[in-house]
Image (cartoon, rainbow, N blue to C red; front, side, top):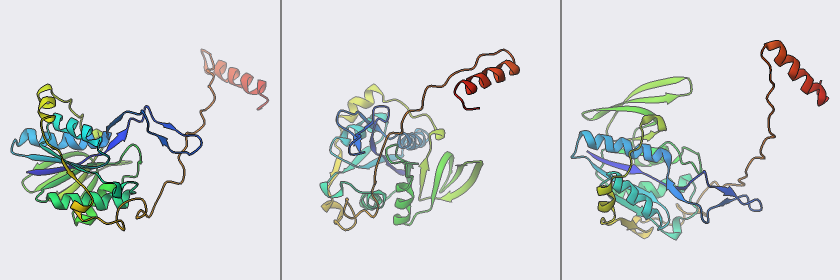
Length: 262
């Protein structure tokens, strides 16, 4: 089986700060990581490879040259090869333009049975790129996957809903988007790390994929982020002490009266 995994390098959200003047993310000095849901997608591919050693896994991403580090981490986990699409022309792409770029890269890679991606990226939270790639490749898709089983040329997929789940059967080739409940991503192995840094990563520019400025990049993007901001922190709460419901109610009323709220 040949699997393509779409991954993205994102800022570590525990470290992200917002510029109060511009409302944009401050990325300087912020560590980058593989997007969490994408790591679950990669782990799903690796589990398939564990069961079928002949499986070949190719990671693909769009990003700056430093995304090479993230791809090597994926190779160290067990992926076979990686493709990086890096070009100033694609910078600033929204989800529509990004899916144009990634789907073009997947077409160039060709010959795949399954495409896996994360549900959404933690720096955008749109959950749009995976489904858009499927549409542009003319593939069936199942999103929010929390379990899957392979039987020949078809998959049985458990899809998470807000109030339950769906069991869906889909034929290969197809595209699935993973959520964190699907698995627990493995760590890089020491032999894998040594092997990963000896491998060549394929780098393609816009010209290699025959991409033009009318379908990728900031100017071609039909949507843009108007403003990002950090919500004001809430005031510190106060615990009401009491051993019985009556004492708790009495304490609460006393606090409310003190603040002239009742």
